[in-house]
Length: 419
Image 1: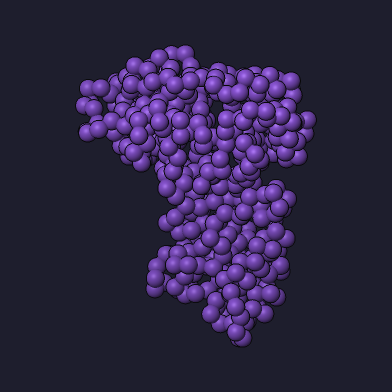
Image 2: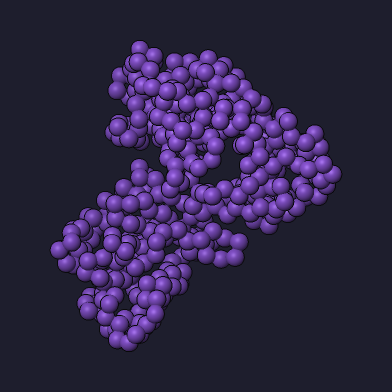
């Protein structure tokens, strides 16, 4: 399948519900339109509109859906889309925004180009230069773009089970001075999220690396304007169309945070684990029991000690803890779900697991072979599931008060308690 055929496939898929979407995002389809609700903002995409489509009514229904959630929306319109769509959006109060070229590049066979093609001091995978992670974040989020996907949004999205996020860093005298990022999923293209420097050598070095790595064998898709567009063309990209954004903001104030999201290892996951290790004297081991110094107050239940046959103990335990966290946390407070040696998440218990809201992320409370934790950022309350001891520790006075009676009824009396 050549690049043109891939683009035709993508064009037909724009308004279809994806197999994967970021944590905390609600995806809804209505006719030819797919809405993505991030809690803080939204996007609308569409397949080619059929002749005779009532475009004004279609636009109005999308506005109503975003207004109900208080989300500003961005709607992309491609040059070859229905000529009625842009005027209908403008008539409904949408404001025309940026216009960019859409460019594609096929995968490159063979080895990555020689180091002489790399600019200045060289481009490196971020995960090989982790000491530059904080500096990389600062450089990336300070860059105004234009970016198809802002760096902070890409980090919040995380990666699909089938895909990946790639971050390239340009080091100069040992310090990160430019960043490029891209992501791949099960779609027909890997997407170039952004580059903070439009220098031709830097652009070519990054995109060549991605093209040779194959990113699931996908061509690269990029949106760009100005000097970055020219650098991409010189790096082997072909322009296939143009795209313009249209923006609309409802009168209500949008939420400032997503209802749930993937934890960034730099700013969230790593530091939170570090504090848990230190404050709870955590000693992960198949034989060390208990694995933590249990705080005061806390209670520990044996997960296999229930005194009567009960079906779906993991589901019952999870439901009890879920309702307890809802009662014990403050409005707007996030709960963090951690899975030892795996990805973690944070979520707002009041903005998840409700009609029209995203599901709560994570695998639940019951340990499935690794330690599972629910906890607040200040560590004042939470749960700790020990997979080898087969115990559940609950700490914090408000959370204990909310769950103790039901957990004891389900699992029997606690095997340990600190008061």
